[in-house]
Length: 455
Image (tube, rainbow, N blue to C red; front, side, top):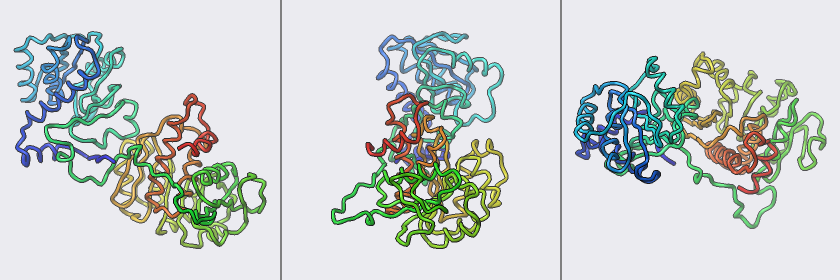
């Protein structure tokens, strides 16, 4: 796991105060990190265009030009005259080396965006918007300096300075940041960073439910009971994924008490006494009355909730449970925020500030593990937040969320804590999509379930 921070200005100041570095030294190391990346990935004499703004992000670009000009064909495009003291200093240095400047964007092998950085708020003016369009239409390999400018630059890679920032992991910027790499600023990253309660999940953080106990039977690995509603296919997909993911027993709770839903799954009208976890909401519809639901939840079992259950009155009671995972998509979470009187916002407002609203919810419901679906999955519990950035658009298909619910339910039934169940199931879910060998548009829930055995 890697740390993620709201901002890094305080970390820069700490480097200056505690380690004796200066603003200029931090900038030089940032520029050197970018230069090393370009030297490692492109042949000498390749053409490099660096677009610079007037502030310190532009100053980073100017420093980069100085470090590259002897090895590459470097051209500077100053979108605005240098304004910050560091930008003026770095420009004076590039001028002393006669590094060429252009007033128009030239086609090149590498294009570096150093237009505006994290301090920029609002939108680019019309002139810069036109320039940004030209940059995005370039055939060059595109590198963002620290962040893509105004999150409008379509970067192939973002070389971010010092540490990861939350702003890089909002859903709306996923198409702009490309691959993200962190550059050291003169001290090792472990020294530069402080402890953060927000973590980025790496693929290697996934821990699978391998069976190490030899003296065991099917009851040794948990029993998940799933409420099977009007759209029974949803609960069947959850049940099949739970069984594939190691759960010893899975039962669909229905009004029919038949095995017609799927030949490999059990069904019952009453909750089995040896149930160790519950799942509800997937395809629920109106198949269960309030009395049915109260009976289903009349216990203290670990619980995973999804989809239709978020629109039922009983949800406010369920939020008081000790072991609970919620997996809403943005529309469902907006409704949940309204229902709990935490916020009355639009889906777009949520998407623009997902971390803030996930934190708001988790601070009120400290016992609940929230898994907020999206391009970057946010998993929050109390004051801890974990980000899973490994999802792909292949998962944007009906039923993939039902598979995720089954994975979480399986781990809950096997004794995982609610937080660990959400983390490892989410990582397994995104890994399944990445492992799929077919075209991304062709992935189905059945493919995900089938792939569980090859994790």
